[in-house]
Image (cartoon, rainbow, N blue to C red; front, side, top):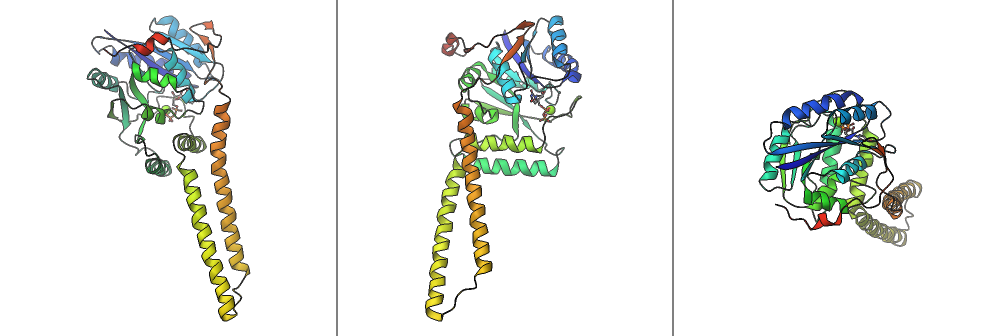
Length: 329
Ligand code: UDP
Ligand code: MG
């Protein structure tokens, strides 16, 4: 009998939680030789999410919940759920039913065939705006070009099934600035992508906006590649050579023809260009410095306020050491 834990991060999802549980149950109850349990993570919601979760876990034995001390963001909320998930495998799903529960059966099938990381790959970005699609394209192109050691999976999000050994490995990566999608790629192991169509939100509203997505993309780049720093070095070298060539040209013109090259427009252009380049380079260095700043404090990724009705105190180590030596059967 396999045991699978479904981890669900929830932020202001009071409208969907009561829809989510029966919808998922309907599909997973049909999967043979497998029991499911649920870890909901209340990520500091401001609405009635926590009350809904309390009621749901009181009504169903297979449901437990964690409530974080404030809103830590989806990446941290997922990690909290993963830390507390007990199954042989873990499935991460959004609460809003955008990830279709009918895909779970297929995920379990591939897992049983020996895949460690079965990820949902969204087949259509058609429902999204042109701008969002273009931004995604640029992001993947840049990441692909620059991260040499491993390739970021395209259109693959957090909807996935992870074997226990991926989970234990993921628990070792306690970085603060989490870009979970990249972390899954970093882990490696045997991956299988299964296509799924993103459903419209069951209810409620999305918390993502362009600024949040831009921040996530920046985080993704700065935590997985230092290539932009290298790029700035090359750019610096190129510009210096260009400047040198131009200087020789100006001197030559003056000596040979007595022609003092027209000053103001050239000066202005060069100055602004260099100023812009310097600010850009500083900005990029700053991004990395910011990452170091956040990581160097070594703060925990999240704090749990309440678990299954009981107030919690922060416990530094969640991984029982014996787990690390388990073999996959
Ligand atoms: N979420 C979270 N913390 C946050 C923001 C979102 O736990 O700070 C959860 C949210 O409840 C949902 C999932 O992350 O289950 C995806 O969020 P959302 O549906 O808003 O994003 P989208 O599907 O539009 O990318
Ligand atoms: Mg959603």
